[in-house]
Length: 365
Ligand code: IPM
Ligand code: MN
Image 1 (spheres, rainbow, N blue to C red):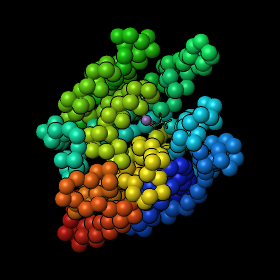
Image 2 (image 1 turned 60 degrees about the horizontal axis):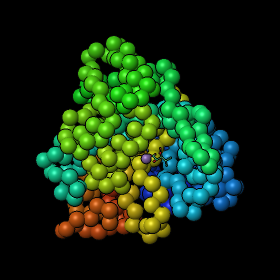
Image 3 (image 1 turned 180 degrees about the vertical axis):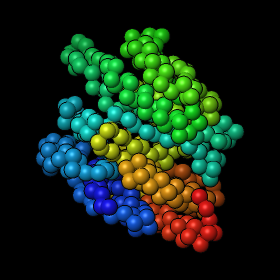
């Protein structure tokens, strides 16, 4: 079986972490016997520089022809003052919409080795393992009318029944594979769109009565994630609320540099680290590649259907951390500061080692 993987390194540290991700993809592909073909394309600011648009038809077509897309990061100060539709971020939004990637999965779990480097208390963090399931192609990100003039600015938050039902079903299905608990996050005390969301999710829930459902207002959810993150299993929410809550969830892992994501539709899938392009550290070889590498694990799981590969990659990350290796964003006392490439090398070595030991029966997942 051969898969077409489109690489969209993008801007800032995007190319550095994509490079790390590709090395891990190649290693895992070899170990688990899958053939990968890569096709690299421009997106974001770098595409604007060359073609005056952040997303070309060529890039889009390559994605339509792909089995999976890997994206580094887009954006930077250089392009901030461009009109809305020419901004690097607009390319990412257009791509999500064009590929129909309505489900965004952002797992927030605690790596034991990092528990001390988090700004949060150890007792609060220990055992935390939830996913933010963010609706990705609707809501206020895409609603019309939108715009601003000299006197006012406006956006529209709208959800259709179909949009809410399909993300709701995804949430309940994912919960069935986990701890069977869905927390649906909204602002139904103020917004009609949220009341509609809540009603619809409760209707969908009738098909999944073996899963527990509870509702939470988004302001409370932001507080609860920090107060007691262990209470969550699947946090289901809309596009804007999910954007905000997933950054909060990023701090559970110690750094946004650790948080992976998968964006999935009925036909296509895209994997990207949650962090941005971090222009301040771009080109230094110091970026944390682990969110990108962890996104590769999600790719092997969701697109290639090899959960074992995902487990091995995740274990390899844990092992690198357990050995005390740290990029600057997660550095703590007594640990060894390493570069992007050194961290990547360590993960690759660990993948080979884990797989080898497993074959010998020394290690089991
Ligand atoms: C994210 C990012 C994007 C978003 C931006 C870059 C458009 O913040 O993936 O969380 O808001 O969705
Ligand atoms: Mn975001």
